[in-house]
Amino acid sequence: MSKLFDLTGKVAVALGGNSTLGSSMSKSLAEHGAKVAIVGRNIHTAEAVVKEILAAGGGEAKAFQADVSELATVENAAKEIEAWSGGWDILLNAPGMNSTTPFLELETEEWDKIMDVNLRGIVFATQIFAKKMVEQKRSGSIINISSVSSTTPLSKVFTYSASKAAINSVTQYLAREFAPPHNIRVNAIIPGFFPAEQNRKILSEDRVDSIMSHTPMNRFGDPEELQGATIYLASDKASGFVTGELLRVDGGFGSMTI
Image (cartoon, rainbow, N blue to C red; front, side):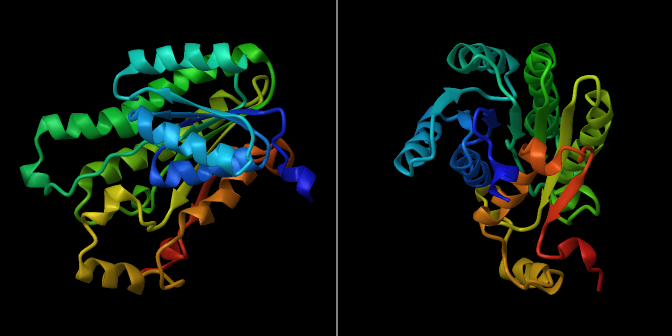
């Protein structure tokens, strides 16, 4: 069974690999043999993740600076990563930005800022890295990070919900776009409620109670619980016939109503 999840010889690019969830997923890619480029807006936190990977004996990793809302920095990072690794096989799209601004108070500047990270940035960063994957003429995997708010929007996070709904559509569109002859699979993980920095600010006591009442597992997720889904979708052997999938890791949240 271990051969199904062996990523030895693969190169993974983790955009947002310095975030709470992104770092956990990146560490698992390294643990399973991949050479991992940790890409983050904050180079210091990206370097910290690399140090943790190396300390754990997880293989080769290096930090790169880029902000997906500034695509020139992504293009520069792609060139640096190519010089370092020669190419890549796995792209993990994990950047994210959230806000609790009520709809009637939402201004275009905030809408654009969130969309620049969660949607526009992901789309065009994927374009940059996918071009190389197509040129390489070998199989690959693109993994987007969506949200439970992508299917039924959550209260208080209008713009975030809209951006993640769009990511689901992008995922399924690109699954067809990059199917044979390119053999690049495109899938998304739909996390439930994890203790990530961007959702802590809206977790009032009442909201936590509401979340728990709709989560059969009756708890928050641990970032490490996203690792299995990540490795599964990254591995050609384990999920070679899986593309366009929106894989829930949400403690059952999506199965509940009242």
